[in-house]
Image 1 (cartoon, rainbow over the protein chains, first blue to last red):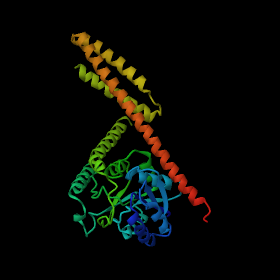
Image 2: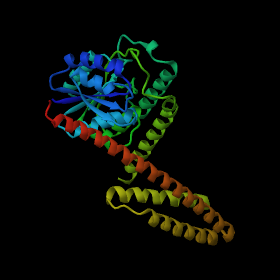
Image 3: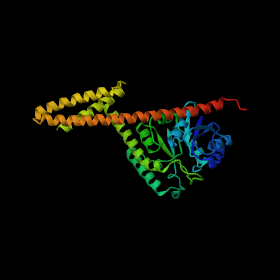
Image 4: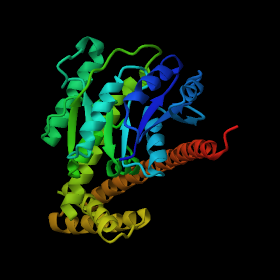
Length: 239
Length: 111
């Protein structure tokens, strides 16, 4: 099954080449890599091209993490890829975990698999700042309440999905493809699973999330979740 | 009593709007809905005033106030949504251009 690994990158010149060079050998031959340079001010795109193992889409301005992922999906859905995976460019994710995720997905049974740091026996809680950890725990709890499913790492940046799910993500306005998509997809009977991964601290640079994003993130997600639930409820009533 | 009826009218029209949009693939215009809501509310005011012997003028003023706030609020929401839509179109165009450029690079013969 031909697939595409989408890597959004913003000012990741110090790490992107190393990530790609470690990722390519562990991926199956039918998997391709696409780096989405989200308007980076450094040499992210040229470093990615220099690695020789990835295609690069270069956005002229910074559209944000979710729109970088959306660009990758837009590119992929124009082709004949059967699956799409997301991975961070900052070295937080291990290439071997991506290979494991692809193997688990190829085994069938799930429409979307999330890489979960809380499922792995080697949990590195220290790598998560306290504020972010509180948010993660809250949204995991909310997702469990609304779906009845125990999904532990709703904010994970490592995911794999089939074409149908990718189409859904492009068709609607989601935030950062976190808990809001899990609740939405669960309501539409998509099968969601988790896969244990290890998440390291970022090797260099700064997060794609600014302070403004960090403040807006919980409110935006809560509003999106409320809209989706209300929409499902209203549609269910008039059916 | 009047407020409950107003609330019920709003809800009914919103459900009706969702129903038409989804089942009949027919998109009811905003002006049509607003006119229908206005007529329905005025009808309720007249009926409620007759049944409950409440002050007709007070109820009419209340309805006019609610409608005015609703119309002004809706206009603001409409303007904001049009702005959001415009930015959304620009974003999509940016993404398409970037993708097309990558595809053109892939097709171009390597020197």
